Length: 455
Image (cartoon, rainbow, N blue to C red; front, side, top):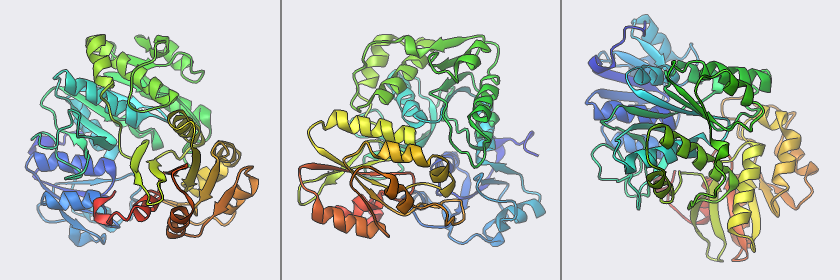
């Protein structure tokens, strides 16, 4: 049904799960094109609030009546099941339906597509590439899995091609509507979503075991990335680190391979960590492939300020503790994030408030989580964030705490973590909320920031 779908002729588009980062980005794209956009989601968020300001009608209960007679495309997140009443209604009315990855694939068909994949680092790398392209005037279309920092960079809030995702805040866009022919997109490996894309350049930042609720093992994950690289055309380019054992066989199967690990010099960045040096090397390799000068690319990277929930400074408490937030939710990411904070604050005590994300992930990497979190000076643990999973009584934050070798406290709620942290920590500590769920709410409560002004 989707093969002959012409996105340009669409007049009404309905998004099921419109509050997601990627979904809200594509909703903005269609708003900018003048289409009538509606959507549904389970809860209010800053993303849905900003879409409503743009005139998007959003329903917070999913019912078949939400799909208007004018709708001629329904888009859904891959977490939405087939028995969802809105998906059922679309099928009964023979309205074309696409998953979010399928829609990205349709968009990429008519563009020179730079697809940034990898278990870790793809959001930051996508943002870096976008920064370089914007700085040299290439005017790309960009879809990224976070919000790009705007003030002081070229992500200008008043730019008519950028629909602000957070008006008045420094986080401005998860979607940039460029007029050029380049499409930069964060390519997610979950459920092999990235196989819907039509890439000209594939970046693989790294391959690690994750999403084991879907993949059998790391070999299965590696196979998916190999299939993705094979989608490159004859003149396409794979960009990755040739030093990664899981990437090496994929590189050997690819005609045009650029090894960014050969760049040895330290790159001047505003964000710390060896992992971000690697991300920057990947972005440099993309710039080189596109014929952008090294000088221009390095200058652009030196101005890159990061993305939402990646080493994000939130403020200072009344007692003087510095509050940061980071999206790290996998043991490898936690190690890298803690290393970055150590680099930036070598003389301060590092306290991490961590919220495990998914019962399956916590169970699969139990020992690795214990090891990674133990790199902090102290840990506060929130209950596991279930997300798409049902409750599993065989795994808990309490079990993690019992195995850790540093001071650790388990709390029943985010509010109790906030109260404890505000009462306990002062200017001697850096306090970091960490995880992929709603742990960032701890910082909002600590700093007394209204929910409407905080993602």
